[in-house]
Length: 106
Image (cartoon, rainbow, N blue to C red; front, side, top):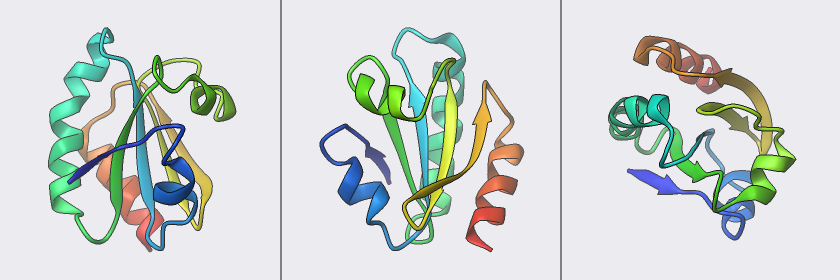
């Protein structure tokens, strides 16, 4: 299940998570973000319980976008033990995302 990550729940859902978290920083008006949305949803289903997968709207959560220096979207940031460990920028293949998820889970 995809989470909605916001400035308000980031601490609980990401920093204090006992499993790795992938956050998709996106915007509703972004073409590549829309293209990635179904892939992100599929991965959220596939890794349910092993890895949290959430989306963070950069227009609504500018504090988080600023904190993680999100300059272009989509930006995918992988968190483990509350810390950012990997970043992918731009539209990437489902396989590329999955390889990173598996690396972070290892």
